[in-house]
Length: 365
Image 1 (cartoon, rainbow, N blue to C red):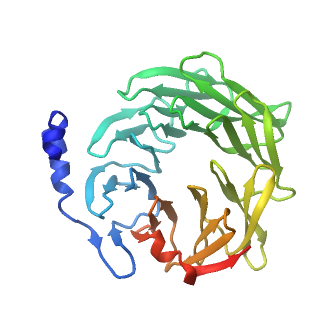
Image 2: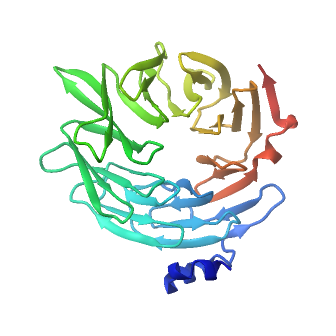
Image 3: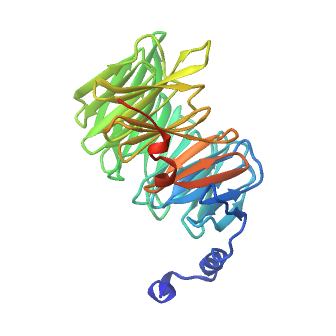
């Protein structure tokens, strides 16, 4: 049925990848996890999700695994510092600080490209647009935007250091964070651009603050700086600000309803403090042993990769769960039903409903 329905899209190359998916390779099933995907150990590997499939990019290549654990396809490369960004439409694997990047979908490599100057970041939208951050001969930062066909449709040049780029939910607006030095003082900037307009849709500055990450949901844009978490309307009007005080978060994530920040609150015993923030308020504060390596938000729930396992934090109910892990995971990714726990040599997959239960609940606040 699938071949008949999509016969115009089937090519010999695509069919080869489909047939590969029938072969379950590098997969081990156990009673503890849904499946385990094994790969060559690579301490520079990075991980992501593409349509609920596991994407792994390492120094020597890129691999995509189906939700069953089978390898969909792989592609060889030689990257010193592999990096990966994903969306529902495509993926970009690039060499951070290098000059090469490739664009993939679920079946094949769509294009292989190079830049004149080192790549600092990339971003992809759900509608197929993507952006590559580098520099030019005239500007410190140059963002090249492409449509779903890989055609360069617009460029954004800034005489400042661009720290990060990401697409808004609408897939058309791109969020840009920058830093500059004005008379010896740091000035951060958050701006929103659209390829249809020459000028930014909005632009705000932060004196003495460095923007770290930013995301746009609906009509609002939020930015996490080294000193505060700020939310704006799309016209640049400030909605809320939460200031950290005298400490700076070691990691964080911005969600549509809740944001999460991790602080190393006690360097003596290695305890961290995870704060769940909405607007100007901290609605939950959860202690965690050891460093917090990663924070993810999915569907209003926050997941934290900690020293002893993964915390699930439900701000609506005030519940916290702990799933203990073995070894030393380096990353986590979450879908509606599944948790992926990645190591540099393998990734374990678990059903959320089976590991976060009444038995693993820690507290109710």
